[in-house]
Structure formats: C-alpha cells, structure tokens
Image (cartoon, rainbow, N blue to C red):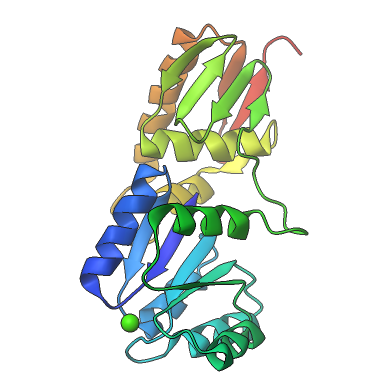
Length: 226
Ligand code: CA
C-alpha cells in the first residue's frame, strides 16, 4: 500500500517514512500543504498522514479541499494540539482519524491499520489470496502450502495489487503509478523487470498461478488449476 506523508518537520517526516517502510508500506513525503494536496489528489494513495500545522496550506484546509474535490482517500491527522476544538474542526473537515504528537510507533501503526480498514471502503485484505497463493503482508512473504519466499517492498506492492484484482487485468500504468509513484523515473519496462522477478518467485514456489501479460493492456493472474 502507498501512503502519502505530509509533514513539514523534516526529521519527523523521515522517521515516519522509516516506520512505515519497516511495516512494508510504500511512502512519499511532502513538506507543505500545497504539494501535499496536489499529491493526495493524484488518486494513487491508499492513505494520507497529514500534519495540521503546515506551510502554505494547513492540514484542515488540505483535508477540506480534498473532500470538496471528491477525493475520499482516508486521512490520519497528526497534531501537537490536543484541544477538543481542533479535533472537532479536523473531523468536521473530513479527517478520519486523529493522532496527537508525540505518539508511539505501535499506536501510529494501529491507527493506520484502522484507517485503511474503514467500514464501507473496499480495501485489500491483509492476506490477499489467489489460487494456491497467499500473501502475508505483515511478514512480507508470498506463500504456497507451507513454502514461502520473501518479497522486496516493490514486489510486495505489485503482488498485492495483482492478487487483489485476481483474474481482472491491471493496466501497466496503474502498477507504475501505485508502486513507483508520480515523481519516480521508473518506466514501463521497470514494471516488466519486477514482474519477471515475481515470476521467478512463483516458479520457486511451484505455484500453479501465472502472471499473464495482455498486450497493450496490462497484467493479470491466471490459475493453472482452474
Ligand atoms: Ca508542522
């Protein structure tokens, strides 16, 4: 999953990115409200961690503009302020959760999991499955009948998207944006390279599942036993 971090304190932003990377999330970081809003509107994020006190546009304004634009990405607001009025204000503008600074890592991760699992939202499962495969997001491992292989962060993100879509075709462009992000220099052939890594891992697991390429369209999973 890809999370956008909007936090102007550079050290805190990079700590957040480290914590999330260890929990197998992909992240992008913005340091002001305007670029945060622009990025959040891209539609490639599964969640946004948003500081309240930000240069250019504050967190309340960012979340209000997001909702006005019809963007329903889950938002976790971070604030040093603990006054009730701020909390109410943020929730009124469309934030989903609040976390006050300072916070503990487990608290942040629990909040994020809750955020990404909001009722009514269609969210990929923690352990998406297809055919004989199961992806363990917590361990970052792909499994088949007791045999498992570790995936890199990008492989994990790719596999999660493919598994969540099952036999439906996922456009290559979607994979590129969701896994590498807008600012990345990655190109379509980067996706091909990573798909080839994943195919090798499927072979290693002796899985019946194949990653099939559909010319000019994208990729989807095929269950060889079905
Ligand atoms: Ca701040």
